[in-house]
Amino acid sequence: MNTLSIDGWRKADNNSKSVPIGTLQFHVSEAEHLRLEQAEEELQRSGARDTMIDADMQTLELVMPAGFGPLNECKWRVYLGGEEGRGQFHLVGYGAEDGSLFYSNAVMVDLLG
Image (cartoon, rainbow, N blue to C red; front, side, top):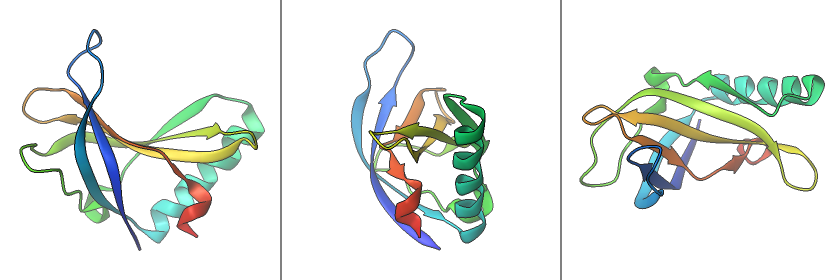
C-alpha cells in the first residue's frame, strides 16, 4: 500500500477559483493501483481524454487538513498527460458539509510501482 501526502485544493463553486488547503494524506492499495493502471491502458486504447473511477473508501484512509471535514463521493480522475502521454491521477471528492469540490494535485500512475 502506498501512502501519499499531496497538496490539496478547494473550489467552492463553478464561479470560484481553486484555493490551496494544505496537504491531503491517503492510501492507494495494490488493488487500487491495478485499477489505475487499467484505466490508463483503456485511455491509451480508446483515445478518451479522462475517466473517473470510484475510490475504495475502505482502504483510502483519507486525512484532510485541519479545519476541513470529510469528503463524499471520492473518485480517482485518471488522464493522460505530459509530453509522453503517461497516466496521471488525482483524488476528487465533495465536502460533506457544503458540497465544495476538493481535489489533490496529480501523481503519475507509474510512481506507485
